[in-house]
Amino acid sequence: MNTYDLIMKKRDGLILDKEEITYMVDGFTKGEIPDYQMAAFLMAVYFRGMNDKETTMLTMAMADSGDRLDLSAINGVKVDKHSTGGVGDKTSLIIGPILASLGVPVAKMSGRGLGHTGGTIDKLEGIPGFQTSISEEAFIRQVNETGLAIVGQTANLAPADKKIYALRDVTATVDNISLIAASIMSKKLAAGADAIVLDVKVGSGAFMKTLEDARSLAKTMVAIGTLAGKHTIAVITDMNEPLGNAVGNILEVEEAAECLKGNGEARLMEVSKTLASHMLLASGKAFSVEQAEEQVEQAITSGSAFAKMKEFVTAQGGDSSYLDEPSKFEKAKYKRVITGKSIFLSREESSEWTEAYLASCNNQEIGMASMVLGGGRRTKDSVIDLTVGIRLFKHLGDIIKDTDIVAELYGNDEQKLDEAEKRFIMAYTLSKENNFKNRIVYDVITSD
Picture (cartoon, rainbow, N blue to C red):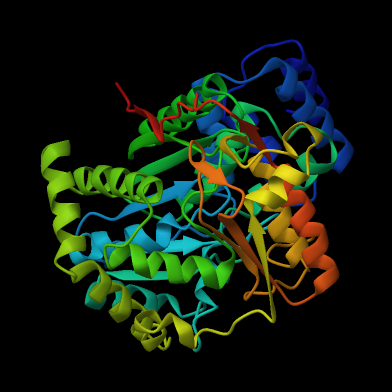
């Protein structure tokens, strides 16, 4: 077996077997296959694609390239959740406490954000004292005792994915369904959960821009999980505007706490409750969607989910009093208020308007505005400013008047605020008619 023959085989559209795929992944991970040959192989995959079995074998080879987390010492069915990412997505901070309060163990490894926002780990580090790195023994003990632990991903979890993704990033082979699915699922399978629920985002602020592409990715990942012996489902949700009212690390922690107090924004709560319900079903703690939804609602209204969030934060060294009193969190130095008039004056056709509807949003630009403020990473070595971000007061379909506050931007540099304000204002389109129609949950994909 040699690399040249395997590149040619995939270039010609032929099907690779398990040994051939493992040979490519292991050889590249160990440095035995050079970058230029792996780049050629990835380009062949990009154009020729892989079937479900090939994609599953690629995923398993990547998952087996490093450590696999053994969660067998944790009592109960372990259910993991993964989101393909978006602007203002803080659902893990909401769902984890809900499930733990209902007796479903959540043992989650999360990453740091690269791009317009921080990841779950970055957000949690906004809570004073919170420890995102604990021993595996302490991790398992905490899940058994409190039902929930969220820690940073270990360096040796699916190392092949890290190395292959870095090459994809510079060879224009990122946006291939099989390669995306294998990247995501290799880490999920290595993380040791019994069941996996995937939140596949679609829209202007998501990697998948169309519903067709989102469904294709969702079906591929569900097929991988199923072939790997894991109960796997995918929920396709909207990302055509920020999820919730907050974009930014500490701001999103504050919002997650408010959601668990019963004060969540409608779209964010619908996504969170839907994902939590399907995770509850996968755990065997509920036997119908309706029963699961009732349990999730009860966890919030009874206060048990918020109490569990505080218990979890305390268990990992954080000061949970900040969740009760968000005013204690460190704040950015400056606040910039965006009014309806600011948006009207930015466009010649609406400069004389006094009211209009928010018709659509370039959500990627909202994310970029947050990154400009310092809320995200331009490179993996960038330092995030946890205090900056955006608070929204209006959503798509809402009517805005010239005196209405649409958003507030928080920053520590006035020049960055100027740039972020321009990007934010130009992200929206306006309409005199309210033609907005947009679901938040589009579809649920199962192995059937």
